[in-house]
Amino acid sequence: MGRKSINGGVRPLGQHRIQFDFRIAGVRYRPTLPWIPHEANLRRARQLLLRIQARIRAGTFIFTEDFPQFRLRKTLRLPFNARTCNDVFDAFLHHEAARVKRDLAPVTLEAHHQILDSVWRPEIGTMSLWAVRYSKLVAVADAHRWTKKTYNNAISALRRAFDFGFRDHPEHHNPTCGLKSMRIGKTDRPAIDPFSIQDAETLIAAIHCDWGEAQGNYDEFRFFTGLRPSEQIALVVTDYDATNGVLSITKARVAGVDRDRTKIAEDRRVALCPRAIAVLERQLQLRERLERAGRIKHPHLFFYGNGEAIRDLRTVYARWRRTLRRLAIRYRKPYAARHSSVSWDLMLGRNPLYVAQQHGHSVLTMLSVYAAWTRGSPEADVVSIQRALQAPPYAARQEAAARGIGGGGGDRDAAGSAVGGRPDGGGAGVPGCEGDSRGSGLVNRLGNCRPAR
Image (tube, rainbow, N blue to C red):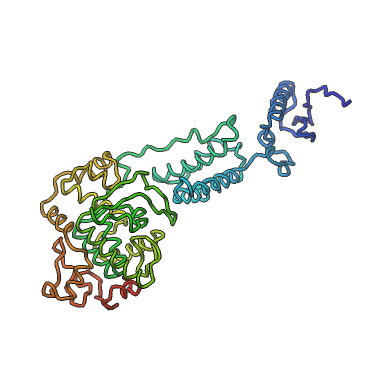
């Protein structure tokens, strides 16, 4: 029989350390702690050893939690060697990647990946998960000069990762529980900045001129429906009910990944105005021509000039940016087309509840974010919007001008701005357009447009 310990498994080691003696799975360990071995500390060490032995029997003992400086800690195997934050981040991101195919948006995964890699890994990545303290996390967050929204995003990503890591160890305190998000008030949100109908018509004409009908129809349709970009590029031919002039919005495409639900997880049916119906009919005609030419082999409504489906928004956004920056119009992001559509509907005096349903918003959003546009608007603006909603598509007006309809002196758009005027179908009246030097054939102009410089 082995000799029974007479010191309770702890003993002084020199004048400045106390040694512990215990076994795990038959292997003997004798780590030390830098405690002066007087009677009070020896009693404290025996109590700690009893807790350690209880956790060993329960299978919850993490060696480096109690002995972070143990010289053989790097050779220990899990679960006795606590995971680092990098280990937890990797496992968390791997789990989220698996969820993308089910219920997680790809952009959420990408955002979490970027935040953890750029903010938290450099500061706490190599630390043991158990060694991270609340004060350390606060110090890291406070060292950045973030907006409230960016701060909340950074804290949220970390909180989710730590929640994931601590699920296996509910007996431990999660330091991110104390991190509070900043309250974002009404004044912290950027005000919407919709286009006037005149500026929108100028931009639509310029995009048609720069990139051809496929791209032009895509942006023109968005101005007069207010669809989210992720919803629009996911549309297929069967979503359009031509008999009733209605479009079914039931899905989205985010970062190249198709999802069977919209951003707010609610399907809706959008009643199209005459302008939107006319644009969509032209898009279907263009699609039919390209399909006969063997250039389209997918069911989507919107596509590039070469017939390829729009998988993500990078290219269409880049084209929007290049065209708008050369015009004498204040720059706005592409999402402003949706804001413009909502604002125009409210300026026309339409019921906010109806507008909210059509655009997939809550009534609260209608009355708070778009409150300024529910009030009275200048009569001239209202008339211009009403005319624009009834006007033919830009491409149809260009064809009419090319055939000499209207005297060849240039059609006037619904807002009263000159957008046509060249009998060769060029971009007269649009700043920076050089006319149709790419040929008058619609299909020919799709892939051979010379972009705005």
